[in-house]
Each structure stands twice: as structure tokens, then as C-alpha cells.
Length: 90
Ligand SMILES: [Zn+2]
Image (cartoon, rainbow, N blue to C red; front, top):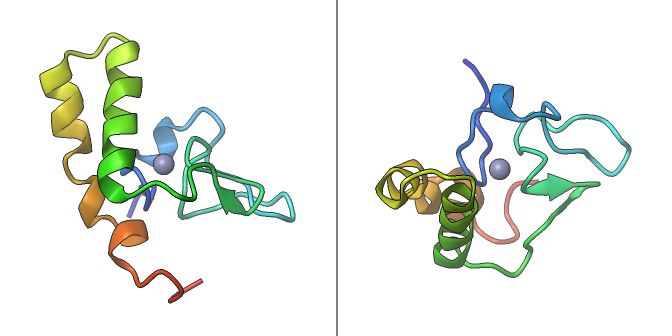
């Protein structure tokens, strides 16, 4: 199954960098480069709702109609990053 970022839902194949980076420099197979870099989330304190809004603004800024941006991001709160317990799985 093609990997999708577990934080924002973007297919990792669409990520220009092919995935986020772990602390040791290897590619993450779970998170994209926009969400995750060098072993840490770029927006560690964001709630799912804040992050969803952030993604929507980013898509809208790229010229996507807002209704499309909303459709693309409405699943964000259901992704594993946001549904897993905060100190659960690594
Ligand atoms: Zn992502």
C-alpha cells in the first residue's frame, strides 16, 4: 500500500523529498517532509484542528480553492498521529 503521511494524509509519493527525515538522516516511512524533520514534528504543539487549518491555509496559498483544501484536510484529525495516545507508540 502506498504510504501516506500519518500526520497530514499527503501521499508520500507526492512529497518532493520522498518523506521526512529521522534523527539519523534516514527517510521516514510514516511522515512527510512537511510535517517531520530530523526525528521531530515541525509543529509539535499543534492540535489536530490547528494543524488541519495550517494545512488548509498552505493548500489555499498554493492556489487550491478553499473547498478543495477543506476536502483534502478534513481527515487530518483521524490520522494516526492525532488519534494515538500522546506517549504511546514510537
Ligand atoms: Zn505530512
